[in-house]
Length: 220
Image (cartoon, rainbow, N blue to C red; front, side):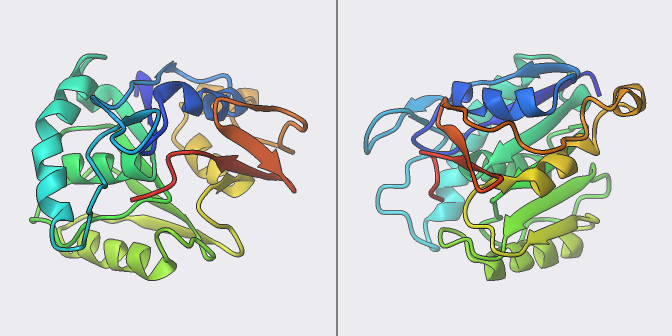
């Protein structure tokens, strides 16, 4: 793995993910791309529109967004050397792109999901699902279904469900990201997060009661 791409949620931007990377410093090269389209319900960017979204039309919207997503990922180098760390809609795109055959070093899906079953793939990269038991946007049942769909498609996902966590990221989620860091970086100790840095709020990411919250970009 040479680089990490941090992929934001809908209505947010790549810059909103920078503090997450800072919590994991030092890391390989990190990039924070913006979604390809303006958010059609306010400020920020989106990977696909969530206006009028439903379980029935979500798969076709994701499929339509995949070509742009693949181009954005490829812009930063060989996807096989890129770890995709996505939050919410960014996680959805990462999971579906890899399910559709995009080579990647791995996927960490933070508060994300699949839209439904995906085709069998013989060469899945590592996939980690990080989710809150109290997520009101994507309830735990959907991430459990995502785990089932991934296994049926040949993947071996690791699901980490954090008790009491809503639609956000806490120190446990950070540790899941850190697990993908190169061995030499882990040995230096810099990527295994301790207590979260207090008192900072910027780029839509803040900390409350020891937990990271990412806003906006918290839907679908």
